[in-house]
Length: 126
Image 1: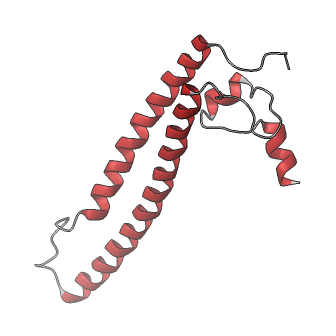
Image 2: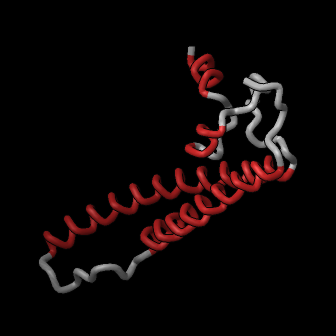
């Protein structure tokens, strides 16, 4: 890689725009998942047979558990994106935390919250 130690302010602004767009989408999805979890009114099954009601309640509980897991993962993703914004502000964004080298732009465009280069990530698994 080059001798460059950090991305320029213009490059950081490009990454910031990408992160803010992903953050808005992630927040919207998180809000939707939370609304799904908290929805107690949902499809009313009061007028159906008791057997169907039990099955429906079981499926509803399972669905809410899955939505809860997705919401937790989404919240973690949001936190990673917010941390990336902090790294942009202190101009340490895009620097591999293991090698100190710049993470390639292609990787950051695909995974804007990345803190390791692909090589560092592979070496970490071995």
